[in-house]
Amino acid sequence: MMSPRLMSVLGSTVAVERMFWKFRELIDGDSAIAPEIRETLHVMLDAKLLSAKDKIMSDARAAIDATPDLPQAVRDRAYRSLDFAMKMFMTNEPRRPQDPFNEVGIYSAHPKMP
Image (cartoon, rainbow, N blue to C red):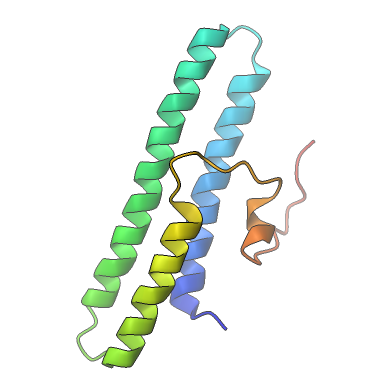
């Protein structure tokens, strides 16, 4: 079972990833954008996405560190969970899942748009 804090971190990460994929869909769906500009925009989005994920993970680590009364075993477990989440979400090549919410067990109330 995942802690509520880890679920919040994963949910934030998935929400950010989904937002960036919506931008990608807009870029890919606009025929007025030249292919070389489209590729440049995707590279920029990749860099911004990794930066946003890194910020979320850094904030989560800071929250763990800012809790002085947290028992060491709980702190260690929280760090291990974040390390797992980092491996899952922090890749050099962006993942392109069909539904990123379902990958982490979060089911969206909103159906996917065609």
